[in-house]
Amino acid sequence: MMPPRCFVCGVDYRSIEQNPELATGFTLIYFGLNRREEAAQEELNRKGWVGHPDNAVWFCDRHAELGESRKHLHWRAARVAIRAAATWRK
Image 1 (cartoon, rainbow, N blue to C red):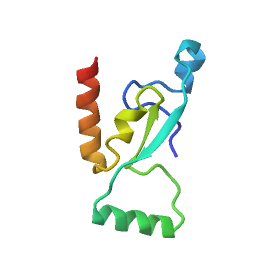
Image 2: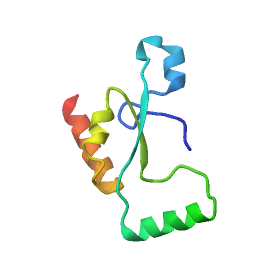
Image 3: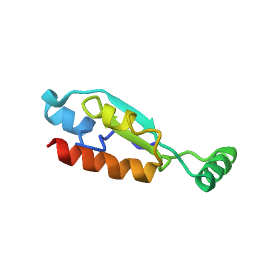
């Protein structure tokens, strides 16, 4: 599993060490997979694979709602929608 790093703003534990004002929690959100991806993930799980799945994305507390509200989407569509929403909010 990859360490927490917000998909939207990039804050991570190293950033927080350097600037404590950035202190936040992190949420790992799993987005949708298509049938082929689900089957492939199930096979990897069966074999004991350990790693960070493509559909799992970290968010800081400030941006977690951007992910939560889109977790029903396929992971590729969710990333595009989140980038668009985050750009609009700036």
